[in-house]
Length: 305
Image 1 (cartoon, helix red, strand yellow):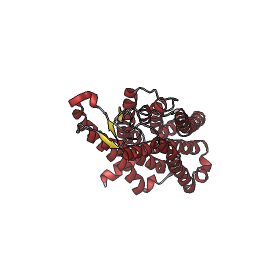
Image 2 (image 1 turned 180 degrees about the horizontal axis):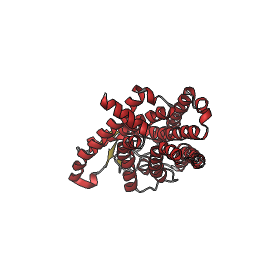
Image 3 (image 1 turned 60 degrees about the vertical axis):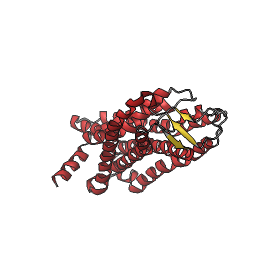
Image 4 (image 1 turned 120 degrees about the vertical axis):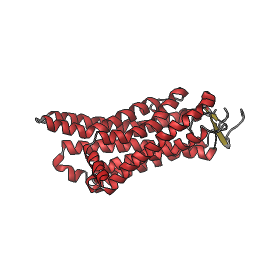
């Protein structure tokens, strides 16, 4: 494989280091995947069907739940099937498609999180202007940009991977086509690509994180000025679930991807990718419902009906 420039397929090592024990992971991962799909699907259906949830806050929440489903669908079904077969092969075009959709959808998730932070900022800090500042046309435009920008920006990124020289073999030490393992297979000069990746991470991850950070900075300042303790508690409770998702999402992704260079630990890559693609989508519906009184009330009404 030493002279291979563009392989027709890649071999994914996945969890091969576990040997026959990797088959034992299939059941737990399948259950988590199905529950994540079901939980986020329920949230989407509730947001569409219940008029009480036809607000900007839940519009963005529905978008986020849809993204959680799509991100898991991009890599988890493939990972599950590979746990049961000895030869884990993915075509070159399939690998590039997985790379494109995983990072496009992931970047969109962060932009939607920042949209949710902006919504809470306007609702708490400028309540009298909320209807104007967060009209449906504004919300649709914000969501549209969040979806379109990463998918357009990722086109040159994935094309650059297509035209790399993969002369270090075709074995990817991961359970999906992640960025760092792909770059390690290339004998091309990837310094410009790594700089571009770093710029993309700054553009989508760090920029949305700063928007979220500043939004909540103003929110905290505003809420602390409210004289009523019950009103302060109510204001903070509406932000609690979103802040939890922000902490989980940004802490793992910034640690993993907002770094210059390709010398990342493969084991760390696998663990963090597993958290973001399997465990976070599973816990998100519980975080979003257990901390949200409106959603819990809608669920109770639906169950009684």
